[in-house]
Length: 425
Image (cartoon, rainbow, N blue to C red; front, top):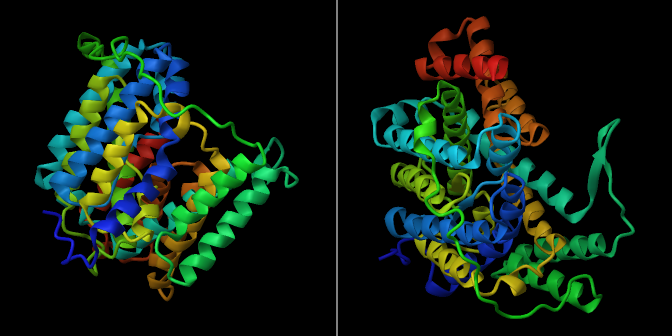
């Protein structure tokens, strides 16, 4: 069913990769409820909705698209949902869920029409490579922040964290262990590093020894609470479009980045199964909204499983099963500290930066926009914004250099849309 032999893998490698991906993204089951609770939603119900949305999306990706990509409610999108829409615009969370569902419907329409191919195929090779590299740096900064290596600073924006923290020492050791084991081609190097960090945390009393299982809370307070009549208010239109805008480019960037890391891409950067993957993303967004959570999206942490050897949808199926188990194993899963999974994000990010070597550094109209994309992603903390700055730079530089014939109409249109988005939204 998953064509394991054709992809040069086996059941053991796929299951191990699935566990690895799960270990790097299970934090969302605990972070997402905390963020959406600030929007007035029931914490326990959102926890259940988060796990079910992740299980549904990941299973659908494995069964329909046969890709080693897991899904869950997206970080950043949940913050936009709570702090920009609900709190910033005083929109009830029920109406915000309806906006998420509507963005999923529009995303599905784009995914199954020529519009999607027109948009995606117009992206140059240098920009596709830059997206992958930029996501790598984005992962690195997320991992450094989660481990405590860097911290916020009001004057310089970022500074060194408290390097005397024992968690940082454990994270640094785990990172070195992962890299060394990977260099020795030891299967499951990332998972071994995570397990080492978790056991060290237990040994030094940095995380509690938790109970094994507990009954999941009720999902009733958020299930099917979408307020569709609220969408008739014109004030909801820019909210729906912003959700669509972010999820379209975040998903595209993530899919390209992970597929490239898995060796599934063609020379032009596209890969088999992209159409199905986008359909899965849109369907999962709608299902997640119905369950009671913000936008469900493909997870860049899937790259951790890819590096552990994952190549097929069996990885995503494994992640789905583990998220269902999380419903009853919440205390155990919640005891894994952030500094135990952060080294995996840093290491995978480092691996993804290797794509920079294939960018054409002899052509300033190609490598300068690529550099803008790469640096903008981590510094704006947004994949979508990084892509936007890159498109604007690509179109502008090509036009002013007198090479307008090399700029597809789709890129010009998208660059103009990004300019309007940055200026007006």
